[in-house]
Image 1 (cartoon, rainbow, N blue to C red):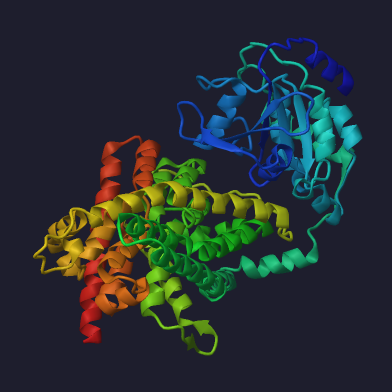
Image 2 (image 1 turned 45 degrees about the vertical axis):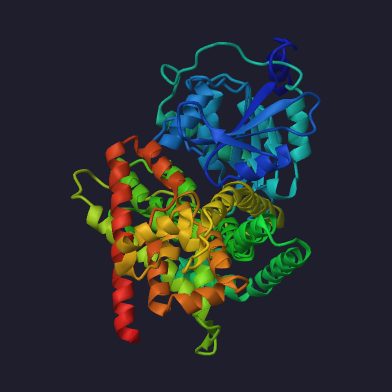
Length: 629
């Protein structure tokens, strides 16, 4: 029966048409992304669907006879949707997205450890009468839990190919490619308009059919492995679970400083040697000044913090791959509801620790418009990785490397406090924005994935993508802004009878001195004001901006020493407080505008964060000055 379906789907041969388009669709956390990476060789293009701001990943399937495109659709539990992400997945399958062709063949990815949940989507897709392949993923985890699935009889019963896969180690990927290759010679499908009406059976009939399939083709144990139950009793306990969560976060921030310092010092030394070499080789003039004080001081001052960023993402990927993050969402659901949010907001807020842009975009999975709006408003208060270079620079310059209580690193504790301040502030803002509930609240329903040992390949791919994104920013935005800032800090030159430093006569100096009275109550000098301007393009540029300014004004003096001698501890604390809250990122403001589709909401977002940043920096400076002096 399966073979006849393949032959029928391939009957309409038209080799002159565009390459076949395959689409991966499945529940969240079923392993779609891992399978996508295996099928495409992890070479993905990322863009938005036409007319909507939902991110799409596409790539070319490697190893097929003819070229074929693969798309990774947003995760969904059903074609009857409740969130914007699921809406896009459904519209794409039905061909309702303007300017986007409908996929020719669907690949339904189902977690073999939770076949009952995945089969609902499979049965809905099957009723569309489109070419469909079932990839039964995480089969190794299913076997380890004592689950046995007769895939041959299941395939025969539902009438579609069923392929066993373990995406994290490539098991079954070749078999899936072989199945796909039977389509790749042809253009399947037709122009038939698909709808979800007048063809769906009742929910009771659907689940009766699913239960019949489970009874006929699946043998499974009656309970979870004992060790997983015992571990859940701890990590999901309302008190012990919070202790575990905060302990994990504390370890992460300790490691970011303690483990990354040797590598960061080596990178810093390398750029220092390069700068000294060029200083001795090149004659005094504009070229040497441009290379040493513009390129090396600017770009090198940001790259030195790459080890901290890699470590932060490494821990996030390990926690995600282990199955812990979903449990953290359940754990935080009750306290977050008191703030007008729920555990659904946890993943978008956690994503914002990497970057607020994908974090805000991830709020599409939240079906409640009010909760989604509040989550968008507070997501940038989660300390993104772009702030980390600024924090690391100032903490390294002003906080000594001392051990507290024989265990904790003082610099790591300071970093933890900054992250914690952002989280607490987000909670307070969400509480203020909460409105009286006028409709029933529904409980959080999420699938708890099995605990598993993080796979090195999956973690490596995630780290590689993050490093590439960071280095691309270094080579484009940060490099460009560093060059512009160097020019502004170097021209026009000082007059012959100058009595002040040369930079004060430059365009940057003029602008900094013009801004300084506004920021004087915060303790900011004009050099600090200069550094605030290019950070609207990328927060990391604050480091290169300060390096450029102080390299011009202070010669070869190290940036950290220059800041330590120029600012004072209250000023340093105030500058850190500013970066905890300020929305200094044009991309973040732009994505808020796209996601809310409201200029008023975007103006509110920008105004309240800048106001909060100014007040926090002012209060921090005034209180610190009183306590220290």
